[in-house]
Length: 435
Image: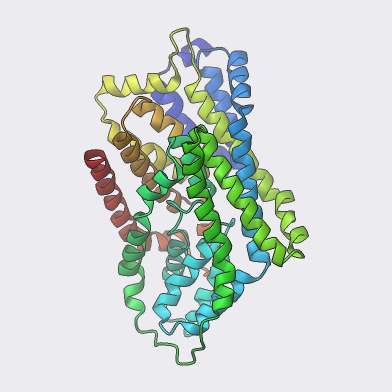
């Protein structure tokens, strides 16, 4: 029986892993553990030999860049927690709420502002502000959920504080500057589409008449460390590559340096927050995050592991099967990240599960135009899959806060998502033809 399973097409082997991960996860098993289980199953049925497969995965986990990646992600969590614990974000939000006269801008702006600081379930942080703006309860709960949820995630395609973006830069092989430059245009499209489908009928909310001047001190205290980090991460990556440091190390070392300097700036003025912020590193959610990181690395190793002397891998078998069946590559580049996003509901998980597969299907010896087009199409597809995921923690807890059903929120998300998806296809095609 084992031999017959190993002879199954790679499309079936890999394809069955995605719903399997979701089913096991929905049974109460942590997401990272579910991914690891299916990585081991893929290793077992690959045909290489289970022990040899485990050895290959262990070797992949020992690579220095992998542990540097984990360190960067942990420091990002510590940085966002520190910035939040200083009270700067709260002061900035309060100041903007008192200063902005237009309630429609507040409905979009406050979740977007919170979205600059990635945090698990961060949409819950902005939900009470949305509720307070709609003090007359004129917007139905499903629409408020969609507004808060959508605008909370407008940065997640390129903002380098998001672990998913760090993962995508890592797996795509692009520099931080190139990745940001390619995907930054998604944000204005999400804003415009969100306005058209979610905010246009909120104009009946009158302007705020009791305004006060904007607290520039609070705003600068919030954004200066963030902007410094972005500048150092992007500029440092380019500089280190100019000094002939390998691209993967240049990106991670630049991000690490930026985090250390920005953290120093934050903590030097608020040293009392260090102990409180450090608790995030011992948090159960952080442990589960590390498990997911281990899982996606294990999964990516399982699909690119050589399974015979000629160097054939599961993913190369899958590519050959697509060619034999006459299945175009573009739909595959769209579907695999989208399904991964729906299954995991987490950006770095969909990137880790799908990007190694997608880029292996495309091939390694490709031009920058192919790399850019593939990155945009794959990330936008996974991003939208993540937003529609019923296991996305922001989606779940925001719906619970506003006391509505996920299924009542979905109709509000379809319109803006279609606009973003169409723009993603156009942008990908433009990069492919022009770059």
